[in-house]
Amino acid sequence: GAGVSQSPSNKVTEKGKDVELRCDPISGHTALYWYRQRLGQGLEFLIYFQGNSAPDKSGLPSDRFSAERTGESVSTLTIQRTQQEDSAVYLCASSTGTGRYEKLFFGSGTQLSVL
Amino acid sequence: ILNVEQSPQSLHVQEGDSTNFTCSFPSSNFYALHWYRWETAKSPEALFVMTLNGDEKKKGRISATLNTKEGYSYLYIKGSQPEDSATYLCASPYSGAGSYQLTFGKGTKLSVIP
Image (cartoon, rainbow over all chains, first blue to last red; front, side, top):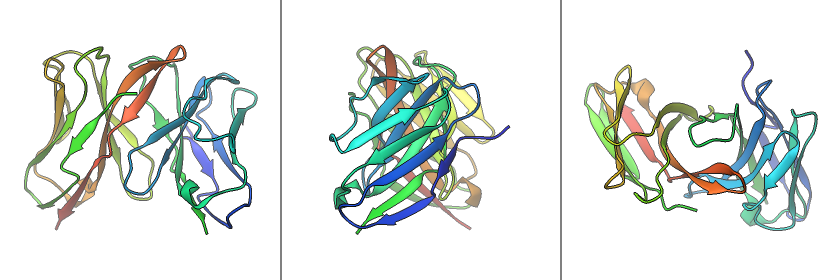
């Protein structure tokens, strides 16, 4: 079946512009995660969805970041008034549950470059 | 959030060589240890999820061991091939808001030279 799909694969934007990143998880996966990797850093947790709810937003770095999920499927991550430090690879992942042992299925990411 | 460390940061080996690298994690409140492989321009892919002290998992030429008492895991690749070139990530879950989030290390980037 289809894996996790992310779009766009690359996005170049100017500082101060808003961007929207999209994730289509594997059908039937109830849990959805957003991570990002900035240059030289590890994967950084941003937000997690269980169904359409986001019980853990603790990783969002500022109020410029928001995310939503609809229909227990597609999720969008929105970054308002982008800054250069937002440049990173943004990865979406989904899984069948939210336990300790559930492996994550990742998309191939969106490379965001803020000029 | 946990402190997960990986070493070395990068590694170059010749085709056919065997290699290994390390993941260190807090031994207290241990739940599980995940290994992922991330090839350039592809999606990170799960290799193993390990839970028990002394556990050993194998997938083809890749194997992993787990020591929960001292807080480390080794990933071994036997007879490295160019297609093994990738960044290898380990991660351990921590409890947050009713679920478990993975804290990832920075990865070990492996380059296999033909």
